[in-house]
Image 1 (tube, rainbow, N blue to C red):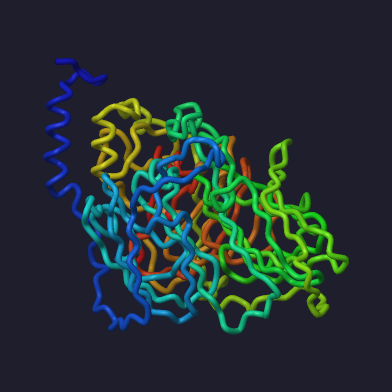
Image 2 (cartoon, protein in one colour; image 1 turned 120 degrees about the vertical axis):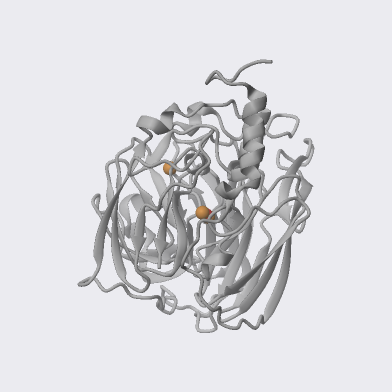
Length: 486
Ligand code: C2O
Ligand code: CU
């Protein structure tokens, strides 16, 4: 019998893991947040079944890839009106545990989809019902919250658009889901995470796609206003979204309207967008029928992912921007707000002494299956790291907050890499950036650059909410914590 790195037997270790798997350590840690639920009358019901399907990502003449998708539709897009009471049943049709998380939706905590914290893992063949009040209009998405580098990395995600009847009347609208894939030449997946990537900027995919194809040819009337909903659904890549050929305004971030800003008036003429972030753009097509191109300008080799071409029609001319109705979100009270600083760090101390298992080790797989944790710790928030490796205890909350009170959280990035930081269950207001690059806006995820301090403010909603980096490898190797709000 071989022994593990810490000098004890692997079998004993696996046995202990299995025993713990059935006992109290895994029990949800929620206490005291239970309250009588308001009656919920669904006005729309959907079932979302996770499963495998084939998609030709390498090209029409190349081998297909077995990706993961909900209901056999890559990045399927659900649209429903604001005010919908959605009953969404998640059905786990894949061969490992999963959960469903509706990213950016303000909802009762129990439907948030975070295993161990808000619900048990949904085992293969099982289901979980989410009851979601869709009160905020905007561009949202949903994804698993377990083994995310694996499941989301293989494509498991969908788009949820909450429509507002008060929105301006655009001449065309398109949804663009950007995601890279880690593929071998035979169409199979390469390892989703390499230690070299996980400990640094992340492990990148080389096959870049938008809606599952290399680039999109879209149409719109000349002189028309086009609404583009652009989602960064990649696990790793930060993108600099820019447009050429027409006028472009940023009209919403993470679904929430902001005072329109001309892309050209932002630093470098781009909006920098990390994994999980979304933007809505209003593009005014040239009246002479010439095209507009959209690209990611971050790397030297620009990735042009969409071209908008005139479709022969000419729209009635309207000056831009077509602004969305302003977001109606809880407004933090800045005078009363409690200030809390948090630091994004490389992992130090105890955390890094955790036993690191190679990702393909069956034990590592078993651990990931039972608690959705990674095998190694590289990162932390406030020198606390979310459990990885052999440590399966949910850590204490990063902060305890009071329901209905206002908080200003200052997020300081002491690492050498940018981190898109996401808070569940809230829309926060991005107040300031020490690098002075962000307009004030509401969001659910904010990109914090190396050395930067970004201040966000929000009104605390009751529940246990995770706060984590949305570069999935960073999250799975420690950069996650949670707030308990009662
Ligand atoms: Cu997009 Cu914790 O999630
Ligand atoms: Cu990160």
